[in-house]
Length: 535
Image 1: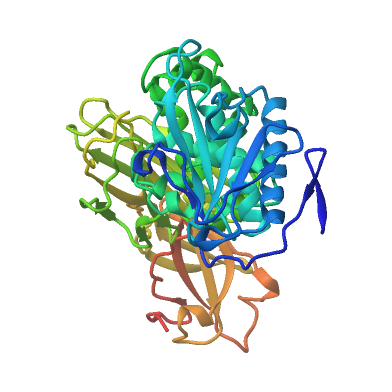
Image 2: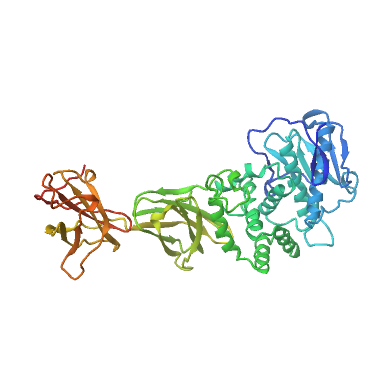
């Protein structure tokens, strides 16, 4: 038999059983209807105690639940390894169940659960004394899992048993999120968590704590974000301690209290930053946010990807965010110097939050929230340096702390500096000693960011602008004291524009703004006047 070292323990490795086509997941507590009676197996029940003495694995070799003693022993060893890590992180152990299952050891039952589930942790009953809502439980784990599936599944369900030492009445989604997050801390090589993240990212508009049997599996990103952004993995345990202090469900208020006590931002502010991290993962990972962010599967859906401006969009009932949900829209750079984005969220479904992720040409990302009126749901922001970016992503967050109904919103975006300046007028040329002096009337720019004038020259008539030589870029007035704009061709690029009797020279101007928008060309001046045409 192969062995491996995990958390300082020698753990037997399974022969690989065939990898499932899709990620296995836990049966969510709020959507499970299993009996609280201890399960029976399809054949005579055998037992595999864990070496450390904390777990008792029940299995059979007969019928639909059949497995091997090797598999059962590996499950027991992974359970010991998980408990060792949890103890080192100061988590409480699973509450003892007296003699249920044969003795006080925690019971794990191996059953044929199909190809989609790793298993489930079943609540039994609240305990007298201790925390108000602590409870006993047992876990059922699937047979036929691969090493990675089984080790991660064991860590997941043993952790849910530890959660019951604090409170059995928290939101089922929070229980799943916490257990999914901690898999990585116990068995980092298993990497099963990355296979489930798409279930949340693809439903980012849903309530953060929704329990629909699938979305909450990938929402393990929430405790992962909290722990990694704060640099404090113990933050999650401390939230559970606050959950334990108050009877019944207080997941949201416990999170709020611990964030405040730890000197972090409010839950709603942390959620806003969390939504930006979610976009900046997987294919958009920039290496600056989630640990192993490039391995995260799935991505947030976009309401739209805009490449022409002005742009506008709005949500439908299928795209609007629920409370603690988010929606995204993308704006691609095409032209202009700055982009202005405005939001109008329904004042019935607020409060609203919003921010923008600005992604540079090199792929570096920055996120900033902008103010949204708490009453009207309206807000706007202007992003300068638009021409240095490849795209900007609008993130709209519904900041209600309860799910409620989806909240509609609309948005607009317009780009300044996207309109070219007007064509200069009145261009004339005159000999000035050995040079040619050009004079013209100034151009106007609707965006107010006129930068100067490009000067083109040719020795051939009727050439289109691209075929002419640009001899000067973004020139400005050489003599502000004189009427019009003045510029002198001092035999630029080695030409002898006055003394060359074998060639005729012609000049054309365009106006250019700070966003590199260029006006149509003037007519040409020189040997004789003519119009320059586009190609």
